[in-house]
Amino acid sequence: MSEDVVTLRSALAKLPAYTPGKPASAPPGVTAYKISSNENPFPPLPSVLDAVQAAAGEMNRYPDMGVTELTATLAARLDVPPDRLAFGPGSVGVLGQLIAATCDAGDEVVFAWRSFEAYPILVTLAGAVPVQVPLGPGDRHDLEAMADAITERTRLVLVCTPNNPTGTTVTDAELELFLERVPRDVVVVIDEAYLEFVTAPDAPDAVAVHRSRPNVVVLRTFSKAYGLAGLRVGYAVAHEPVALALRQAAIPFGVNSLAQVAAVASLTASDELKVRVKELVAERERVLAALAEQGWELSDSQANFVWFGLGEDTAAFAAACQDAGLTVRPYGTDGARATIAEREANDRLIEVAGSFLAARRA
Ligand SMILES: *Cc1c(COP(=O)(O)O)cnc(C)c1O
Image 1: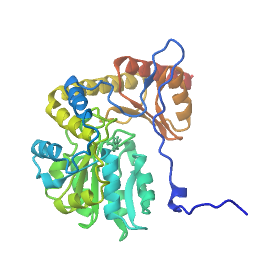
Image 2: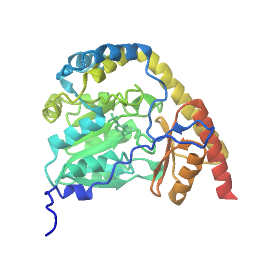
Image 3: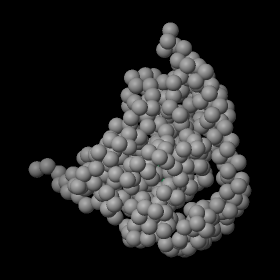
Image 4: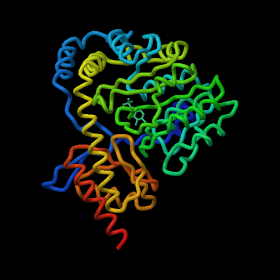
């Protein structure tokens, strides 16, 4: 007789695996850089670290389930009513709550592809059906095709801007046209994980967009520009009924006490953090210009990473980077994503990419 096997959900068999950025590794004598997870290369600000260290002394207590201080601080900052905010363990956590709150088995979630690899996992795990709409020219969202993909079964549409991993944004005008076409009972998520790095003047301000559209939900995170990836805190801005549903669907005490104090301290120190973001944006522009000079035709990244649409050469490029101590993030035969990091890492990326292109052309 075969061994007893417990019954697990069939959805698990369909789940794509989330591939986390590999740890850094390098040949002897070379500094290794992990540029595969879009992390902020700057260490925590002293003021933030102090707040977290003080809070660590009370880790025997549960966190504030109402996330009271962070809610009040952020509501004032964004000029939204506190009831329109909902928090979770990273904005990935909040998105999981949103899918749980909107989708029954068999319901459809429309999103672009390639986009954030957590999307198909969260959707499939919930028993919903991912509807992936190929990116259009320039590695950009094809919002017309996405609107065409909406059916009676669609409960959610995810718009990732800037898009991970291609870095491209939708324009404010494109988004408005798209939202006009989406039925009012379908929730549209605007995932702005990289908002702080955007400089394009025609990019939308999703919080402004949400004010007049009750079906729009804005997702943001403290993981990237704010440098709190290890503490796990993200949030949604949504009209009251949706924000309430997000709280109902949350794991109790999901946002830990260190994350809550770190987020408040980071908002208090946002001027200092903005200086760092500016530096990273300047580095992105420097890297993109150097790569263009070498002959690369890359999409216009508005995030803290660059995208190499390498096709079949993806694995070879990732290997060449690895040999130089740079761990980038390859995506099958689509391309590779490299995070803008310390200056030395960026310089090395430019160097490796230049040699790779020269060898490919030879
Ligand atoms: C990094 C990222 C997030 C946020 O991740 P959390 O750390 O869970 O807040 C959300 N969306 C996209 C597209 C991302 O790249």
